[in-house]
Amino acid sequence: MIQESSEQLKQQVRAYWDAHPCGTQFTHLEWGSKQFFDEVERFRYDTQPFMRNLMEFDNFRGKRLLEIGCGLGTDLLQFARAGAVVTGVDLTPASVELVRKRFVLEGVPGNAQVADAEHLPFEDNSFDVVYSFGVLHHTPNTQKAIDEVHRVLKPGGRIIIMLYHTGSVHVYLGAPLYRMAHKLKSGARSLVEDWVRVYDGAENPLGKAYSRSQLRTMFVEFKNLQFTGCDPIRRKYPAAVNWLNQKLLSHRWGFWMVIKGEKG
Picture (cartoon, helix red, strand yellow):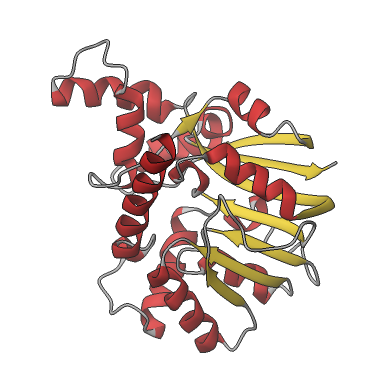
């Protein structure tokens, strides 16, 4: 019964993201055009200027890199341009089709295929690097997905993974405001879970966030763990608020928690 419920939820997740590939919400251009991909890329790194250094796009020339949840392939392309041998997987056929088109337009080699993060179709010890940004908290069994990351990673291989963070300004301030706006009871057990879920759209069926202590337990099989918080520049915030968050708050209290480590 639990397995059936999990699979039903995963089908809902697939349907939602197949209809709303991540990144398409930031442009009104025709999906799949060169202008579309260029606009998505420009917006992503204008609002997330920390990405190139923090995600280490330029550091893996000649390395086999897997991205789990490749979306539109925007980050995967950065690794490929810098010489990594890239493979991207996504739960949704729509995203995979767009990634393949993107790489053809760029004339850059890369592989993309439909796959489930909880059941990766690769042999043990296949990749030097596994990257995933804002994806594994959308699968029902996030721990199973992390275990799969460990399995397909080579000994000494590196992870760069972003998951949502409960100990963040976004949750501390946003959840109570969300409760008041929707007139929810103060003791509603699912308040934070629902606030995190709607971050990616009111119809998004699943989104989870974790504390640092939870993440240390979830990634216990990895060594040399590092945690770095970050947040995008939000267009609706005044410039001074964004500056304060970027310079002083997000490293510790960012909603996006980047986990780095190695397979022992």
